[in-house]
Image (cartoon, rainbow, N blue to C red; front, side, top):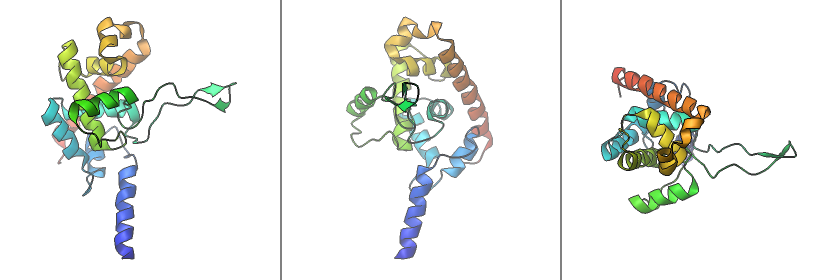
Length: 191
């Protein structure tokens, strides 16, 4: 009985930790290839469902949360040192906002989905990118523009809110470069 409990706790602990070497897709997938938690299978399922390449999905999550399931934006400081409010409700692997996450759950019927569950988060990213494609005509493999729409929202992207934001453009370039790297890595590794 104790041995079974120990194995169960080790499996849970492995699910909760962020992978190391997050700049290598093969390494990430190999570290998260558990019995209950197979990230590659989850990412491939999202790719099949929404048409967004695994490399684009993973690059979005890499830039948003660094593959940390409990990621949140840092708190602002009151009087320069007292932890205060967070700038947004972004949470989890996908850094989805509360309202957008609720839209996703309504649209997909995935009422039990959780932002700190990788399988749910990668499905959300695929769903959101697919909507960016449908609403703004962004190609499903155009990581740069998909990321801009992901960050600013569909209406913000359409208005060009990102055009005067070099910081977000830099993150979008980072996501595009990461997707390119991930794509090459995934083609070379054994999954």
